[in-house]
Amino acid sequence: MDTQLKRGLLDVCVLAAIRDEESYGYKIIKDMKPYIELSESTLYTILKRLEAARLLTVRSAEHDGRLRKYYRITPAGVQRIEDFKEEWKQVVSIWQFVARGEKTDE
Image (cartoon, rainbow, N blue to C red):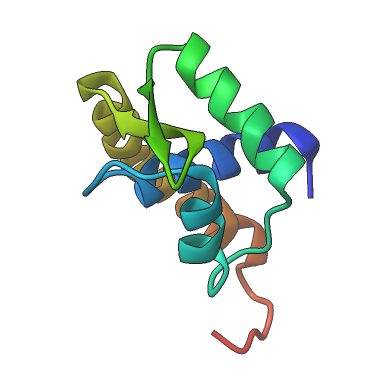
């Protein structure tokens, strides 16, 4: 898969993982696991990128004697998810054009 495409997809997946409630790294990975494998190093790179883009906010709080970072989606992050859903319709349409006439399992 194209690296840039995968990067964009993972960004939106992380935003979707925190859309409904604030979360932290390990929980995000756990919540995404049934759908996609994501390493901690990849997740934290994505989280930093999303924070820099102001698509999420971060706060630190003590939990069991350790400092934990909690991530919350911003209105711009919610809008990014909505934009992605509209963009994905175009991707599906392109795929249908490219695959036309081919037999598929779908």
